[in-house]
Image (cartoon, rainbow, N blue to C red):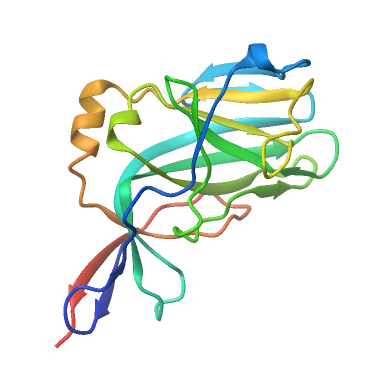
Length: 208
């Protein structure tokens, strides 16, 4: 399904001069006194944690993201928006998945993009899957080898020590990265919910 968004005058988008939500610290398990237990799986498979299940059902690139509020301007990526569709299921008690991030092949961490207006975290009731699309603004050079990580943790990612952490290979190859860098795709931002999310493409056009 496609949504047409018309903006007055020249194409109006919210732009930034640099990629946002990049954390310059590197992920190094040896630096943690009690490192998390990584539950590593491939794209499409379920990471079984002691308190919940995490599955990435889809990953795709975007150049623009359009907020649900059609009075707001579309957002343009500083690098490439990486859209991660995830299924999160609490298995013991209602759980907030507060730690959500990407890790690069060099250990660099990328937090959910605030400017994207996508949700930075999600909550699941016991036994009820929550579906969410998380959006990250990533430099094109960092695309190959990205992993998606999720845990109950905390928003700043400092409370995963000694706990289970889903680690999912997004299987983005060097060839994928080259084509993703040239993407012009635009999507409507979707809120988390109890039904699988079908991303809607957005056509950005100039008003008269």
